[in-house]
Length: 254
Image 1 (cartoon, rainbow, N blue to C red):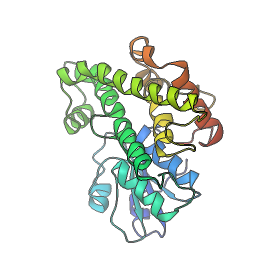
Image 2: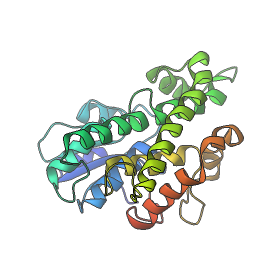
Image 3: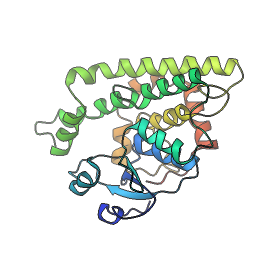
Image 4: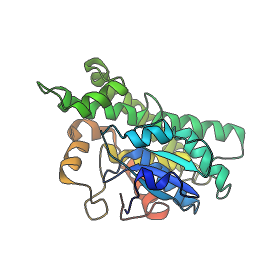
């Protein structure tokens, strides 16, 4: 992906999306897939993972990614704000159901995947473990671990919490399939389908031919796979694969 620097993006028109260059982070990949599904063009802006990103902080108030800025609107970085921005800029095709009960279900399940203490949050705590176990952890790891509330106890509890969320999603898919629907909520694809498809990559990345992530990063994402993938059932993986086959662009470009 061809990025511009923050300094170039500040005065650029339209939708600008700050992403971690060279890393298929699930929050950024989810934002990209939502915008692209809706046909929204964006200018990719470089963020350096683990760096101070002083220019980005001065512009958006954030040092991490993703962050979206549309025209002169305030920057948004929370997964829910990014989703609402996509819905506002392109109401169709809708990613949030009109039915209030289904809408609440989509938002609740999405929060369990992408929100604070959700699936992705728990996996991130696990990924900090090797670096934090070093006699002198790298400054970038210490900075990020502190930002996201890492502790040995929190990391030890992460697998159980991830398994519980995956179990709930499995039950939802089983019930939906019994009713003749392949998606997590309702009769059509919604935001939660995109979040699940993107966040599975934190545990089981897509193969190199469609996900050209660096080997060191692939090894990190797949670390502990013998334990964490035991609850990634064929049904959950089939859902991920169908999303990429039908709705998310491949090969991945980051």
